[in-house]
Length: 348
Image (cartoon, rainbow, N blue to C red; front, side, top):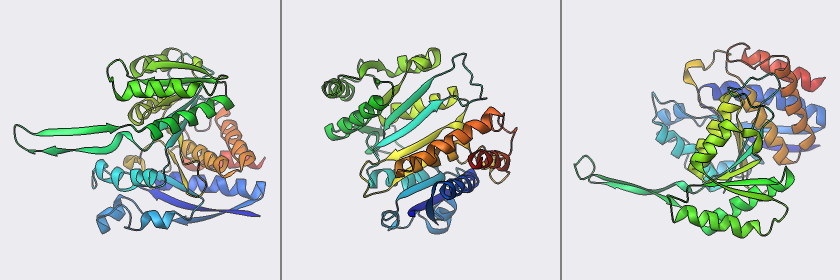
């Protein structure tokens, strides 16, 4: 029996709630499909920061390195730790250390879920560059507090970084409906985004079976609202992908349905999986958090590990639950009720 080692970082707030729910479902899938999961839980969180002054230990990355995958619940507790500290102290270092350059976020309506749009039947896969671009952390501040204070934030785009995320997107499009839309703002950003456009055209020549479109970020935001059913695979920079995927979560019914994967295709290092929603401190521990995005992220983890049949079965179980109206409206079903419904459908 194949055993997969998992590093669990429940984190803060409802991250703990949804991680527990996800592991319940994954354990059922493992038993049903003949593999085993060996999780190790790490207490790294804002509470850990308050106690130690760090979001994770100095050797935290090395502690995670041997695992097959990392599962993250949610991180953030703004009342005690600024978001800039928690983000740059845990999530971003993990993404960069393991070169998890592809952030994958699926957006579609689950059965029984009513989105805010009239459009139905859309199925969008957003591929966001995950390690550089606008979130590179290059820049600084000088003359702080003075009237001549200057702050810079430098977006870094490397040929290697842009090429690999575009190539990843083309491969995903080839496996789906063979349509890729590259999102930039090259009419205003004449260096980085024109470079991105040029790289898109260069790589497109290697994928003649994939139809390629170029779209500016503002036009894409409108497109996702007006005609999301026309979209297949979207590839965007770190910042643009971040914004578009929150819009994608909105049109699919809310952040409670938004799953994600942080992928490094090199199997020698772990990839990381997490729901897109935050830690929601106001509802933590109240048994009302929707675990669907977290469970969906767990299914994406199994798919990445090679347990594709189990991953497909979990997603089908989620759909079976939502088709009955379970977990489709905020607060209408408890965390435990949603988890139990998914498990029951998976066991059926």
